[in-house]
Length: 396
Image: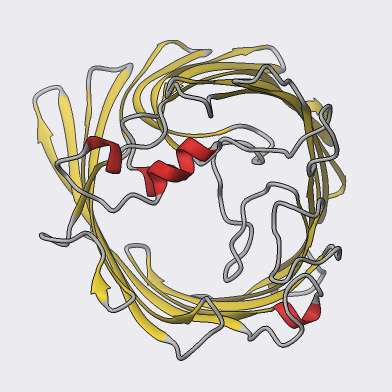
């Protein structure tokens, strides 16, 4: 339920989003399962600033219980500034935003999440040009998930201490992105080109800069079928002066089967380079987003194949199921114990249900397991890792 207050010449909206997520997991595959809980509270307000501008502000309070204790100490609450921006459309084809913005480059392989900065979009004929500049050092580290170097990893594992800014803040980097999208290249194709560069401001021996160029092409052979292909290439520059190249690729197919049931089948493939030699290195995205539901490595030296099926069973109830198999593309990045020369990591199955009887209330339930025994990188007798969870989402 959204509340609206009319003011002279202005419209003010405000509300609160509450999410409660209990879970029971065994992600290490050893011992018994552990109960967990996560709660988030997101107050927000938005207002029109004249005919061409709008203000949106939000914050996020989180509490997490895991491994038998409250994660954030005393008090067990984490505060973050949420998505917040001033948007302005001075001309019909030009749109500008400033603040903490949700950003994802077109390939979805490199950077996804909230970033502080500014960006603009300009529509010229069939082309949509975009550019942005962002800073990451004010974000909370576990939300940003920027772990690109050994220095990043050392700061990431520091326990949260509000008296120590280094234990809260994400890796300090500047990210610049620019690209062009052609959503109607032809009646049945679209094209997106993007360049992105990030510059390490942390200093030290582990300093790492990187650049990426991506191209994404989509074709719709028929209304019920969409095919997408993506290629990414770039360079990594470390403090020692090495400049190895790194690569990634993705392909996807979406198919809506005929019939009265509203459903979709999706196949997805992702690949990223592992370390080969001094000229070709491990693909390292800016954000280390999980590539699975239970087994959650980042897209570095990883290859995955995934099949997903989603269906709306009745008006208020949807279900989905997915199966994913993981491979590694080098022998170092995702190593087992004892070390193995194999590349097959194992498979994962996950399913979920979503019940949304009204637009501002939803209940989800899901669960799945990762089976390391289906590969041979980990020990032959490595136990299954699993997770079950539920969530209640309420908008007030």
